[in-house]
Length: 91
Image 1: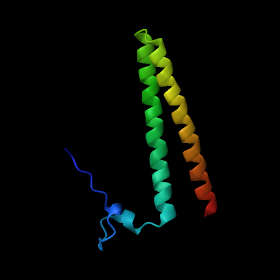
Image 2 (image 1 turned 180 degrees about the horizontal axis):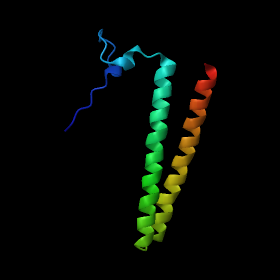
Image 3 (image 1 turned 90 degrees about the vertical axis):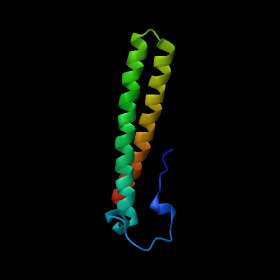
Image 4 (image 1 turned 45 degrees about the vertical axis):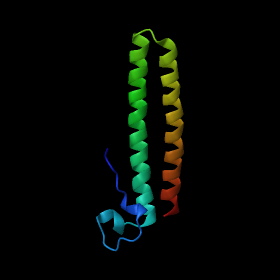
């Protein structure tokens, strides 16, 4: 089983691991928000692709539910994009 080690969880490290540790909080937040937005949009695209495949297989009810998930994910995009816009306007 793979173990994920997140250095942000350990405050006892006194050395820098990468450039990210040199970023200000707003810079980190902007980077995260951009990443989450792209990642979520990729999910929406995948959901819609599989909803179409389910529809092609006659699974109308399942296709509709997957499409509903895509719609909810698009609402997540709006919230993340609004957060990013507010962050940019603070600067």
